[in-house]
Length: 236
Length: 377
Image (cartoon, rainbow over all chains, first blue to last red; front, side, top):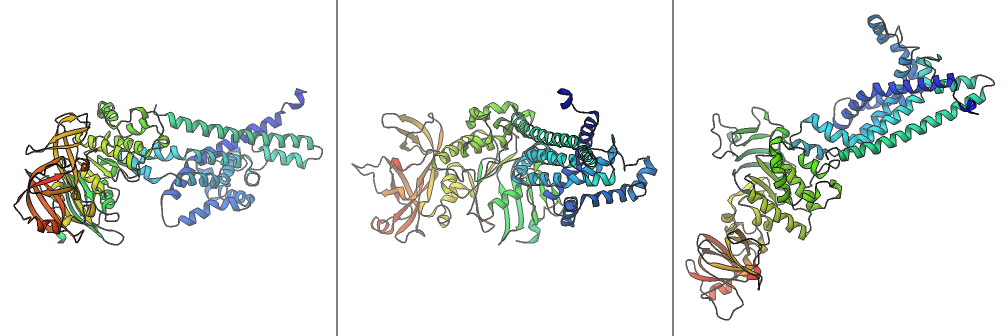
């Protein structure tokens, strides 16, 4: 009975790999994502709408196109990839790091959007008040703006994580489908569907995906509640 | 004004008082220019008075450093805060000004205690308990701002500003939007506070009753210009300012000192600087406490001598100082009276003035009903 439910090695591999890749994807976009959201929420500059449009491209482009563009630029013969390879011996295509880059690029607009909305919702009058109380810009940012934007930050992070976890098209194009290296849950599922007679295994992965998605949603809810509580109690 | 006015003359010695605020500013606002030369004394409460849209809040924002002027400078004591020519602009967080905005602007994610200590330097810790007691917010310390009433939130905001140990306290219409009872309560706290702290206060308001209760000096702003500026008591005597300072409900105020209380009738006796006494509704201040009494110009009557068998509790020996036709009522004259070193105003019908043959220099008795005093502040 338990043997039937217990996960096979291949399934474990797909899950841990997916979590590792999605986690890394969110990890590398978090700081630039908040920075760009800040820029868009609090500053006016030339080319703002151009930047805004570029940021949203991954949302509207077919993921395969994004993957192909990544391959063109970060591939060993791409303008950036060549420099990375010759200068640092780094090669991103067909590696899990490459999959993390693909996931991150696809998740970036979702993160920026959520964070930007929550930053815009923070009352600038509160920031001005903090300034008159002697707080410099950094203190205002870390004690007023970001804490008040935490719910949006968490939402954005979870959205980005979910997007990276479910990433398929850009990943398979840029990082390919290598077991143990870039074969994440969606790619493993796709492989099983392509293989005659593996419908049951595919169904298991399908259920697994749903469970992981639910767990991450619940975790974000819990984190948001804890963050709110911590904020309230920080000065006790 | 000549252009040179906006330049800080080189080598100017610091202002006479350490904490005096000196502004010479010009800034283009929506429909007009803010063009102001104002000195706020380093002691006492200066009311910045004017209708909404006259430029009061814009001036406050310039002083706070939230906006920059087109020309001019701002100096607090010897410290230059803003100077356009040399591009000096001390950012708000380095100005050491305590600012209380119209809305309390408390941080919703900090408790009251966290709000109070947000800008508090170590050196101010010793003041914390006293100030909390003075503002009556001790029982609120662990609450979140969202659960406070309007008056409570503003008291916390005032405490928060004061605990930064500012060199000047700026209050932007702190009573706006509160209902009558809350307003009176907060005003009571403010009056107590301004007596206790040794800090110049710039108090923005458009309410004459509020200003009469709290201010020592007055700066009258109209259309971005300073139209009158000086001791409030003196300005309240200026018959040409009646329309601006209260109009129909104009009032003057008398400084007095509590003598004793009559609990049976709930009356308090106070003495003026020339030794004459008044009976007013009971105050809860101990004998010796200085109080300010606000007397409406329509609550003062004149007689040649103290009448017998009258319900008037107060008859003050006064001398007529000036008589002018009222701009408020065509039937009335505005009469200015001298009592010792103080002055009082009365609005009387022209008919009464003529029949009683009132004239400048004549000694009279000013009759004031006890219940007419507004001294709950």
